[in-house]
Image 1 (cartoon, rainbow, N blue to C red):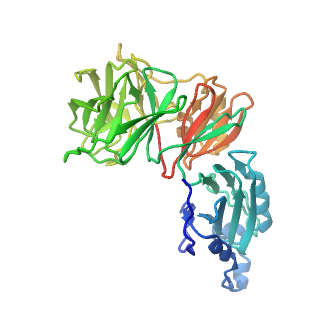
Image 2 (cartoon, rainbow, N blue to C red):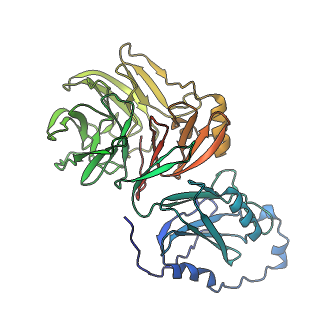
Image 3 (cartoon, rainbow, N blue to C red):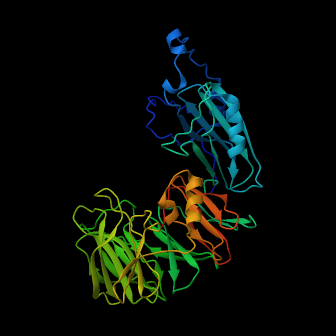
Length: 467
């Protein structure tokens, strides 16, 4: 749904940003066209003339150059303004060159124009105008220069100066894109902080569960079918709070007429999808971290806190379909995080006999997964023949960082020729194994590939995550 924002003049002033250890600011604010246009016309305060002693300081003795960013929405729509501030004087020509060479669009055919509007040598506004209802673009100012010839790139924080600009018409949406043809479609969806991939009756095509405060929506792309699931409202005093904002945690498998649910991070239920009735199967003394049921629906695996500190270690308990415990394993999973934060652990079944447990990623376990053979109870590191040393090296080179988390979250296309991945600021990229090239797809919450070769991702108003 699109709507106009009120024309209110708002001026943002960044102060106290002298520490080079602070990350760049990248905020989105509402601002009128008049206000945005007015910013460069502000009369700058003249800088005092440098003393002879300061004039002789060499570049390596100066403060490290840093850039700080703010994003502004404008009225009318189809415009965005990115405010760039620096702690040193900027070389204007270099910003023109670097912006032109690094600008990438999610739709290469979309018309995107921009102007650079300088207020002072330390203040730049980049005004973008575009013609698409849904467009994402990005650029990287690492190689832009100061007036004394230094770049703004930082070895300790690569890609610090990447800026991602999203426009979705103020309507949460689901994007489907074929990277080979660049054809894409936009489907309106529901705003959420959490999107979960669901497999139905062991099928290959995923559906997506959009969690909501008042109602959940299970959406299947192929037939545009939506199943509405009620939010469990009978919260109890001994429920555990969490850091993902919802009281319900559904299984990643839905069956003919039923599924499984953990409520309040404590109680495990079998849920009838026709009438919503719930059958209590088990109640945990410690908070639940993850839930997954086998494709045949006969086994339910649950990860829960190992200790009262709600730390990174989780224990495993597996139940039969009636809620009878059939297997328990202490210290089954370890996902690094600070004590006291309750997140969702990505637990899943590969098939009816092999359970995939999450663990920390690293060189010895780039996928961050352990396979538990439920019949023999033996464990092994999950491997993927498609994930070669060359693929890992290319990913590291592209991101200028040896980040195994990116490697662990690769999403392979049905023919395994393409791999999609997402980085921390929402950028979605596609790696081509044939020519080892990278294509900027967009930004949002990466979901999965469809059987027809389309890649799906969500663009919500809130910062969403999935597993």
